[in-house]
Length: 146
Image (cartoon, rainbow, N blue to C red; front, side, top):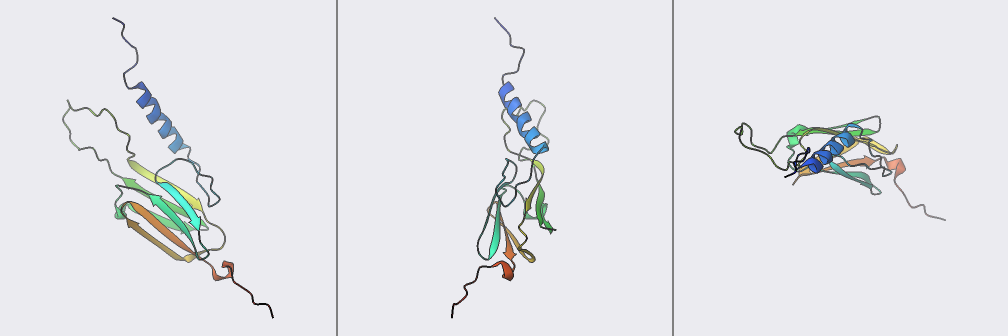
């Protein structure tokens, strides 16, 4: 009887647009914890010996990830390919498409005691673990009292 001027999935479209706007104006998190939503999701912390960064990037191939450390800024960049079949027929339709695909870039400011010569990055089961060593002068040490 009544027809709507909006498609049935208007809320999904608004949600998609909101995610794209957030990614366009993404502020990078720092080690102090100013976190914003983005891909890949990050956990950052430190131990007495190292700074640990965990990037949760399921579906990303190791060869498509680039990790750089320059002047105390660690960047993680790469691309996640579409999981949708290519060359689908014209009469096929996607009803819900929530998985992020495309190029991404995240940056983390590291503290001054980060050692750029002691960086290790490993990807396993969709989790990228980056370990940045801390300089020996910054590590806590016990001083004996005589």
